[in-house]
Image (tube, rainbow, N blue to C red; front, side, top):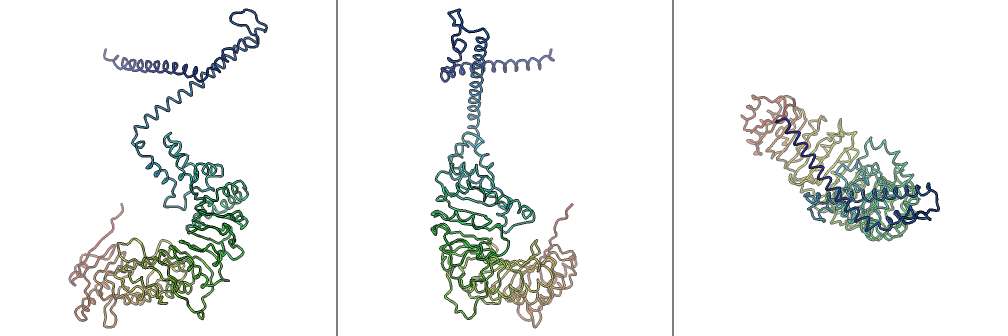
Length: 610
């Protein structure tokens, strides 16, 4: 008796589903008949009259002037036409009703309650490149995915011109570029003709994986250069250009850029076929944009010779010159070009060949660039760097980044006593370490709360070992005139062991340091902190942190004793706290010995991985 209950429930559900389906079918048939009568009446009448046309037998006459085979064929085609008409309208009606049902269901979703303006902002964020721009490729599928979610999203996406105004022609293709041109309407365009490898090359993150793809990228660029339709479409929208990032192979590809670009603000140019220094033979044409690009503010030339007297270098806010041979020019002409850009906010000069400045040439008045925030020098001779820094007045908030080939270059820069680096006296924290590429890195900032470094210096890979660390330390010692108020000093050489003399020299130079951190330095080198009658390194030191240290602890005890004695005899500040992190040789007896000398000791160890 009870075993039949599941069967009865299943039969009851099946019957209800069949009843609902029959009701839906009957309703569908009624709507379908009404729709056919309203929209396809003429076509239906033609199908009904088809068997009796061309002298066929009428319903009221039994006479026929054609054979039975032809009459049967006409009846067959009439039935086929009626079937096709019913099938087309049934499918269209069902799709319409299903779409309406999905729309009503989607309207109940929280995402569909968001305002249109908020959805527009979200859609625009999906087209932005991620932080790791090296491997990012803008694809047309991003925009197509948004516009194929629902009717609402498609309507919003298509009616948002800014969503289609920025695209990479290389990666979306020429046909879809025309779709973007049409849907962007009258919005200003941000165009890129870069391959992903070119974007990485331009950003300085060109790794081995992308280097292997450079040949494919050049082949794609050749096909692009041979496509006249693409250039025709691009030139047709030239008055709407706001930014253009172009990678080219030969100067002939720049000839179409001779028309005015009244709204162009960003112009990045990269010679994809030149890995050496670009000279005047790869010069940017003087008549580019017909000399009329009044809103241009951002110019970047990578392996493209741009004359320092070119009219395009005027009123810029960002200037980047890379891989250019300026041996026929001079530093004086470079400074005059900077003087024509009083609103400059970012300056980057990388791998430029410039003649040494003539010392007999009288120096002109300093160039005031009050808005300059970032100054980047890559692989420039230190004499040229000093001449530029001595001729430009940097604002207090400017950030200086240097990539040097030799640690001795840092000595030259710091020993030059450049007068316009006075704002570096705001620096309170100084860090020396070795990055993952075995390059020394010196960073400095005004306080621990500041995320930006006022000074960021990196030295090439070949100097990550050997005597390079001593040269860096002595350079920092000579830079004490610029970095005169450093209070926090951190040195982490990661296996590059400095000499005791170099460490003593730099620690004796910074007399204002109160917090010192030493990492990966053998214990014997701690003798640089010994307070003697002739040497008083870091006389106001109060906090000492030592990490990643596996040597004997005797030298540390002698350092603490000598500094305690200096407090009594010479009135120096006493060492108050000592922090030991990941120090293998530290035990309980050693901590007790240090605490007996009046120092508060803190021991930290990293958790052991299981």
